[in-house]
Image (cartoon, rainbow, N blue to C red; front, top):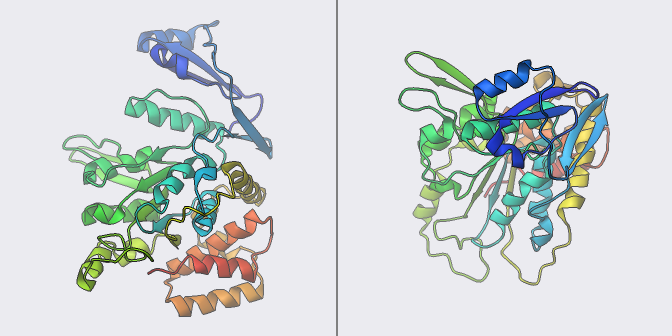
Length: 378
């Protein structure tokens, strides 16, 4: 990780220069082509690109390492009426980088919440900001060098190779690779091809994706927060109190079965959303939510974690401080909800994140109970 006083250089195309924001410890140069980039890198006094925009980045410093973030919430949770449980779940998902699935009637606010998730994600190190810029360049986009994590939302007709990576000759990066470090959101989840969804099981488990071709094997980082949203049934009215569901039971079962149990077992948070209420209040904004995410981020880093709570391995999981009451409730939850070992581990990780958001060093019974409430599936 970059430390204060250690300078780095990054060369960008000149046509992209007007969109570049400098961050601490990084010097940005602009070049028309590879030849000019080489000359810049070997020159004793290269011309530094002067950023014409005001840098909106802030940072927190933990153990001499700076982590950058922005408080310019382009989409704000203040616009979302009601849905307090879903908003709390989104905050937990962001704080620990936990996978989340929202289920609800059309128009209840699923998309609004998912689109705002990006702006409350944890701060980024210098290396991460440069990595996000690299992903932009790979895709042919202009990098901003802002500490805003990637957000990918492919359409439900996306092909397997476009989502996971591949191609007829070369192992091109897919959406899962471009989402690394950020969010991969699949809206209308049950409308995606089942084979495409099953292909996500590997990156959701190993956080890497391996693409094999005749002459090569390429492995991409695929460590992303998976976010899914779906209707409760084909017509969307199953959970509605005002509209009648037109679906047959067999149609609902077929609809639900498009998501396999192994796939669903990789989700940390399940939320059944309320129907839209025009009289509901928008009582929390993104800045307030992000402050809780920052608290959780600080707690994780102060424990010496190099990964977010959702990525803790078995050894690190055993080291989580939890009260006896909390562990007892967790075991009861395993029986009640029929949780697999993976499901049990996810509940404990989510509880750890909830405790971090409350700045509690120990996972208590209340944290486990809340985590288990997100394991219920319709």
